[in-house]
Length: 66
Image (cartoon, rainbow, N blue to C red; front, side):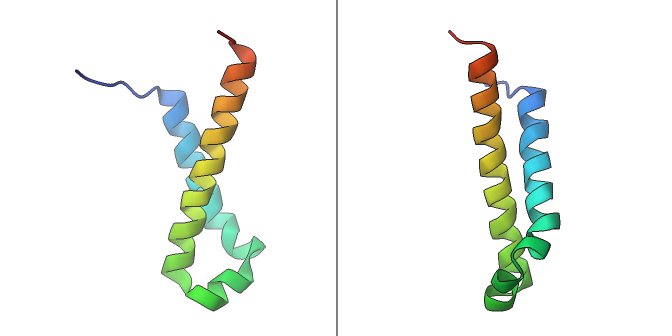
C-alpha cells in the first residue's frame, strides 16, 4: 500500500525547515555559540518543520472540519 503525501504539506514542511535554518541563526545566536553551526542548523531546521506541520494541521482543521 502506497501512502501519498500531499504537495502543500510537503511545501509547508520544506518552507518551515528553510525558515528555521536561515533565520534561526539570527534569532538565536546564543545557540550557535553554545552548540556550533551544523548542530544548531539541524536542530532549528527540525523545529521549523515541526512548527510548520502544526500550523498546517491547525489551518487544515479549521478550514475543513470533519
